[in-house]
Image (cartoon, rainbow over all chains, first blue to last red; front, top):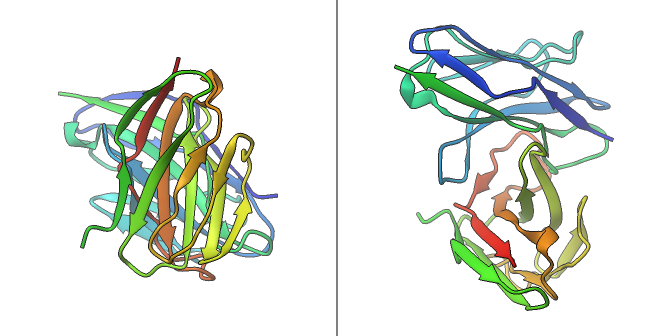
Length: 114
Length: 114
């Protein structure tokens, strides 16, 4: 079945630092890949997505590239802000077996200090 | 648009009590699902539905029932609450059949079973 593995957290950074959160996946076929963000006390919301190999998703300064050869979709941001503090989830859907079902990673708690 | 609305936001139950978590969406999405979020485990799929009258089990269905009588509503029932069901519950909806579409989440229900 499908699975998603995220880097172990939590991650604590100073403002303006560079962020990388690693995500690797296992799936058959050609899944779509997502990053969702959860701000404190809220539900998840889509941050960015990529639907085919070599696609780059981007939003709010965050980027991730769909790497089929390494089965990865790492999240990056060049300069984080305090307002980026949240939990980040990597997820996939589609491929040959799961249809619209979303499979999530464990989540990575990011704290950005002033 | 309201998007996905969940009620209640917080609930405390005694062991053995039953309750229903409500979920409604106004986007005419075919696919609706329930997840539970536990520390270090990401989001796990409880039940899902691909349309009115059609439901199926996810990864962790035991102790939960669902029904889908309309496109808009997808309630989750706890038949006899147990402390292991203490969690945060999220309802989500998306367009069915296209794995690349965005899932929309409610704000969550924080349930404590004592």
